[in-house]
Image (cartoon, rainbow over all chains, first blue to last red; front, side, top):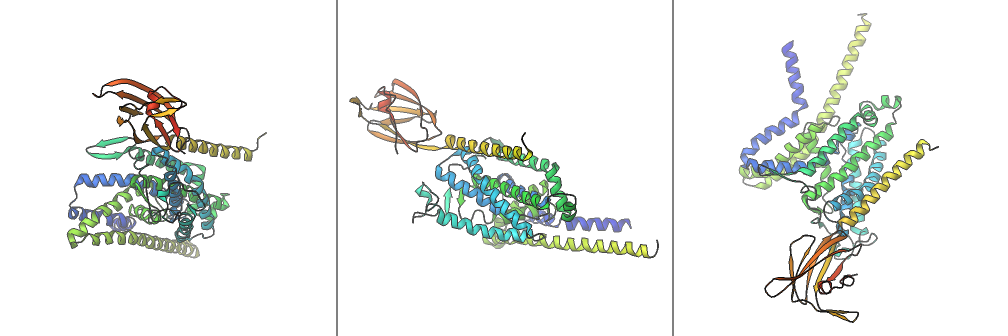
Length: 373
Length: 131
């Protein structure tokens, strides 16, 4: 009996942590094949942790509210990019430029988040696919605004940013004026590894905010809604308003996250930078062991490290194995989409199993009552 | 007596005001201004300011730059308030005279400064907006 329980617990552990285990095994196999130095790998991971943490952490609050993984963070990313376009046009440099871009993105992110929240309230139970499609819709509006509105309706004084026809923003914007403004604010080097301390401090600030937020009345309301919407509503919690707030907070954090991400990269791909953000952030979170219904701070950090180890090593490993880096490149894109699919299937399977277990327990109780036990 | 709703709106307006003020401050103190630095002979209100053969200037403690007579250099300054130190040099690069001056760019997009006028003693007309 004890052995049976142990085996069951072990199987449950494997199922719960299938994705991170798979990635750890994959990384352990790929790192020696890639032949990259330890120092290089550590430096890459530090840079990528700084670059992506804010974006990935912005996904946590909707999970608490039971709204699943918010593919709609691309809305926030677009708001952040619009802030950056204005800051580049006005030539505001350094940290002031980055902070001004954040301030400019706030009203836009709040509006888009509120709109997304309203839409998701009308699509309860299908939040993820709805937010995914919303991202495509708002991307169309963004492209219309940036490609036709800017320079024509919205004044852009810097001609270097405009397309040769006189309106519309160019494909790439050089963010030279704010590049590394946060990363290099407090320079720190440990054993030859450059640490962007100020970026990590802001990430730490966000972690503290999330921990504090979970304990607030609003955070507790979100958790109650995440567990059971009907019970929460009966308890007097304004379910719809709270759900909207969770999406608004997530969208706003994503706008800040995108600005931090782009100040690290140093170049903004006007029409593409935001597109992959939702997918890659969600994939990273899932790789860290999160699920659609449960995600924590360690999931985010472990996920970023594991997911990006694969990003760094797989082209080199592919080249060593197959003689072509493209194979590795293909592999990492394939894996990131595959991981999301696996996580969603596992979630649906777990839900099905839970329902089945509940049904069996109910039948057991009913039988016991009918036999008078 | 202030109602709960009025109080909430006041707080919200206060937060918006703080962000607007911060935005304006970031704009003012983060704005990059191109500055054209001249060392040219000019006549202002009947007074001629001869361009010295060589000048060396330092803006806000940046790298020193040498500028010959009748030449123009370009600099980029961030924010509204700055300090310039100009040294008049002889043929052997020895400093003959040093002029130190604080100036404000304000909200002007681009400005032109003529160091010949500054070292000539006119602290009013050495800086012009290039609109």
